[in-house]
Image 1 (cartoon, rainbow, N blue to C red):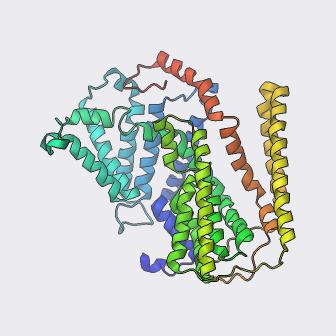
Image 2 (cartoon, rainbow, N blue to C red):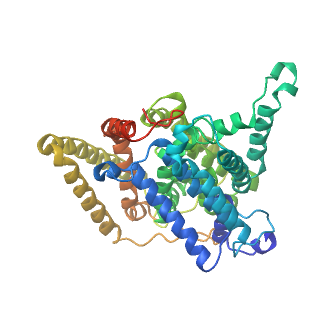
Length: 491
């Protein structure tokens, strides 16, 4: 496989790297590919349904935290066994029968809590033989799924801690303990809410999936390419311009991607060859791209999974996390740009010339005009929405929603007046940079979803609003309709 990859174009190489890291690089043909697509679509629809107020409006499909986590893990582990091959030599174009079997078994074990929630509630801490079999099989299948998706290291770490749980009496005195029985371990790890179905999986169910889905859709729509082109049009003419553009484009891509791997591949495929062309050694070009893309996890609003774990473990709101992360992210990127500038000065590098040279006065005028337009638009939107809420009260959200859709269509129509930003081949020589004005204007509609997300998180506090309104309803619903066990009812 490696030999064939060496003859692929850079864009296809990038797709192969992302596929291997995030989707297992398996591309089945025929009906199995439709199954993968259908299950992924159903998973996305389920997560949107669970996160929305619709279950409470229609009083249908209301799930507590544990049931939602069970379904979430069932979807994910089913796709892991179908999408990630067991070995490097495993087939890539079809799914063997044993993977179908393991996928179904793993999904059943993961969904066991949801399917038998009431029965498990009646006997907390007293698992039956079937419970034991399901729990042990589920833990083994989860470890194997972890190995397939993330490699052996994390699986080995988990197995070491499981071994320590059982082998406590045989450990050195400093770390020795009395050990745990198999019944106790599986009850804690699989049949309760303190092990596999604990806080980490809850964060993935409630927050991480939705933010990743949002960023993925925006990336597939062309926002990633737009941010790269904007960065190059603004900074490509400076000393070491491609390297500075790589830093800024990675920062902009970090707005919609919490994955460092995806950020490196998306921007690095284009920026690393250009950095090498203007004089950066290959190791420095790679280091700059990796550093910039890794810092993308700090860039709000779409951050790495660790940010969402902080929300649950530390007990602070996500708004506080992104507020405190914004300044370090900004400082880190300013430092990277400064370091790149020093390297470019030492090597006497030059940037890529623009087709139409601009004077200093024109550059300053364009920059100041852009700042003024953004400030005026922000003031009008802030006070305009406040005025709408004061006048129209309950129906204000529908009016603002209609105006948002109208604004998006208007921006889309405005962007249609400018040429499409086609991905360029980094192996080809770039004679001139694209003009900043038309480049920025051709994708303004990509910025509106980000603006709406930040507005809803920081100004409207929609997450807190939903919890305040529906939290007690969920609590009362499950008090009346189920017997809680092991902390499974949300408070």
